[in-house]
Length: 122
Image (cartoon, rainbow, N blue to C red; front, side):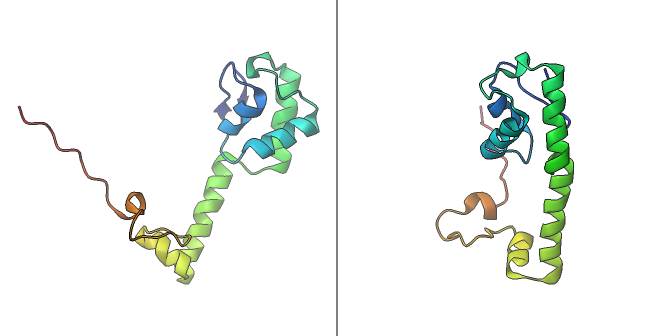
């Protein structure tokens, strides 16, 4: 099971799908990475050689920000918006939808606190 950027890639999945398990890499980025390294996307992740894993790891480290550093950057961007008092920052602070979604009908997952499920009485 190959390990890239602190994430164990799943067994028996195509490499292009397995790379999407890394935070910050989607389908498009994984296909670009495999294209640049010259690895066939249809290979299963278990069948990758050590050299191929090293090529993918080096490509990701050079050109992409993933996992911890990406999460940190996202949190810092949100904190900056809150600190400057922008509209988006206030929406983050209040726990409401940030990108203009309708709150009258469908924003329950974003705007309400989670309630404990009531236990059944016997």
